Image (cartoon, rainbow, N blue to C red; front, side):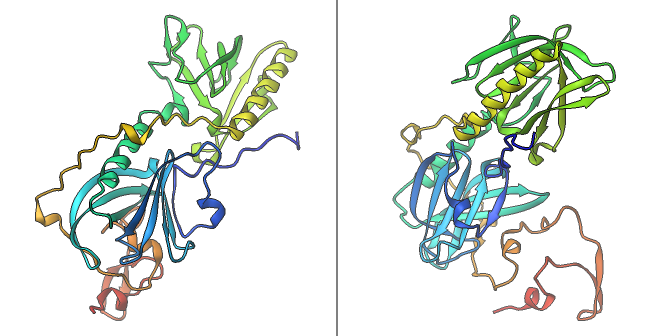
Length: 344
């Protein structure tokens, strides 16, 4: 159907982006600003620049006060580790800062945020707490397969805010050679299928990860096809039930719910700033971890945030350098050997 609804990619919590357009800084439907921290410095990449840090239920957004085109969008799903470290900043001297280790597209990045209002502990309390709330609610946003906690005593365990709209029996999952008979559970947040013979053979597919819902011919006959978004692998999930009028009714209902969800999404990150404990996380006393912040040269923007040795998907093949007369690892794009060796 050429008029069928096609959902946009849910990238905000899954990606790290630099200097994005204003429309991508604007909060998306369902995205909520949990806290806004004034006077925060992006110490790793924009040393000495005053900025503002928004903490949402999907990401961290840092924006320069002087030039809004200078910004960062760090998805909560990319964060691997959060620590409080003592750093030496040219702007503030020896201070506590929030250090984030992130992974995106097989590369690791580190971000360092310094709150210039040193009497406020919110930088060190809000972000870790929001990240924990995000990690505890992935079932709202990601496809889950063979979940052991999906069902209890023959019924689904509903999520907070979830409403069951329909149950459909006699639904074939077409992922195998012969198919598997089971049941649909249709809610306002996701579509669930589980096997009648083995309920632990199941799939929970939130509308958040569905790109389109359509029908297509298959070796089993006409099938209901859920096309997942690229971030979920772009896979097709196929199902079938008889008669075709029954499947058409299920399709229409799912398409309506899919469209409604993307206008008013439910992401499941339940958090309030008032619930944050006031205590400040203790910084490490191991001074081997101290970081000397030096404003980088105007080289490749992403390379500024690369973790040492993690600027690519794997160890890079050596290349011959005419400058050094040696085989060396190829520098990141936009960075020359002269820039790497230059000491101010």
